[in-house]
Image (cartoon, rainbow, N blue to C red):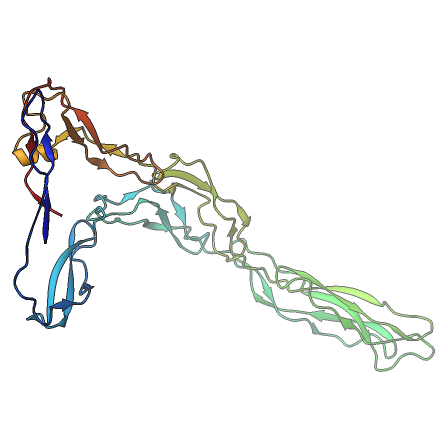
Length: 380
């Protein structure tokens, strides 16, 4: 049974004719049913969207579960409805002050700059963030004096107990270009004969501590202890220089410290600074720049409020049935019209949400006398 209904478009006014029946029923689908009805599976994705952004097409396919005259059906559905990013060219900050890559021995003048805006869409790529120039600091690096190990050059001055001996060492590398000068090359030090003198104090052999520095001039300590009490006890503790060769210290700098950003959101620039923690020494690498400008900051997006267009009249149900524009009738005080407006910009990042997009407004028509008018029949 097919049931149909219709609605009153214009009610009777001023003694007009009453409305006819608004519902009716009739027989339908009188042909006999087939033994097996066609049945398909659910639609499944059969490929990838044709675009990465903007309106694209996504293939879908479903398969016959019961005989349908075909094994499968295909269709294309919309996909990737997100808006494509605006084409933006790469933006670069200003060049840093020139700096030499080495303190001596031949370096190169260099400059660098930071990327303020990465390219988007089909925007131009970044041209480069580093530039190299002419040689700099070509003067030779200072050469520090280097000496060999101490060698005894005279026998011990005594045949028993403790005496003195003479030691020397040779220059291996002579200083040059204001390098560190050579330390002493000759000294005297205590020595022991093969046996102690009769009745004298007897001490243990020297024990030596590690050098206090690995380079740059340290001190090692020697100690010994009395094993047999007696007169003429020798010195029990002494120090000697050690690891006198210069250290090659690479410059060390602190982490960058941020300055004030030029924008609170949407991408700004700022200046960064850092300090020298350990200055370079010897042949250690020179310090890198301690300041830079044009560093991007606060790159997160700013809140975007919703924006809507102007109100426009939309056809109502009675106007559609009559093929008329809203409020086109010459009279009818109770008539209304539907007004809509479109979203011009969606809200984002916590911006204000959209106001209502539809409303019912009066047609502002005078009252009139008319017979009842109904719409076309609609199945339900």
